[in-house]
Image 1 (cartoon, one colour):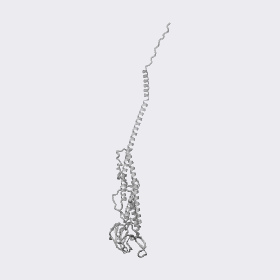
Image 2: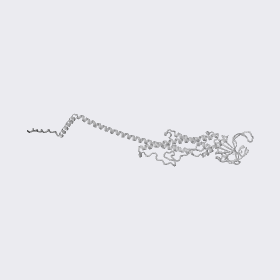
Image 3: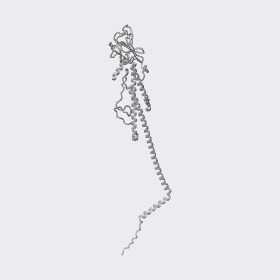
Length: 403
């Protein structure tokens, strides 16, 4: 018996993969086309809106960058303009400080000039410093290294470098200005001390210093006017201080000239003993009280008698109890008399200087022996000559101390 035969049925064919992909693509295209057809306007509006937004953002960014560039340009221009203004102000300030330095130098030379007067006090002011700067920003004193230009041309330097250099320059100008103020203060203080010393010197003689205020003409002065803008720089009143210092120095110079006319020198060289002082005494002839109008100074017969200050001889002759007498007019109402001279060495009208020999010591007139009768008179009235001699000794001691 034969087994039953099975007949194989053919398998169904699967669609090809490319066919499925094509069908899917067709479906998507159909759906997209349907969407575009249905929502065409909405899609186009969205696309246009997005493009407009991108354009607006781009234009806003461009505008922002342009604004920034404009601001930077304005800031740079403003910074350069401000820097240029500061540079101009610094240069003007430097020129003003240089004028101040020149004025201070003139005053210091006046203060340091060696006076050739009998009554002048020694000057203990500090001399100019060697090395460093003499007050001018760009002009060093002897021994100092040469200075570079304070301000270099701005186009060759960056803005930061120019700003840094300007700050340094302004700091140097500040330091110079402060130093000038201190320099002026020291100068004014020294001038004030000299004036007080000279007034004290004159006062010790018994004279009122104010009586000479208009007696001695000031030295000749002149030159172009170059004003100093003291308040224009810092409000410190530098110009006023400078004027005050100049007036004080002028007062000192005037008082020195006054002191030069005072009889402060000794009428006899070397140490001389006072045998009879000024004032009330027992008269050597009458033995009664009498006023002695001068000093009697012991001296050898024939020893030179010398003028104690510059002046003009008004009397040179025998004069009663004075014997041979010389009288010298020193101006300002001051006169000196030399009595009992053995010999007269001058004539009336003759000009003499301090220290000139006007005669020789003797014992003529009302005298008990060789000596010099020496008087000082103010407006014709006798005053104690010892005051003048003591003041002159103070000056001599001060000079020796200074040397």
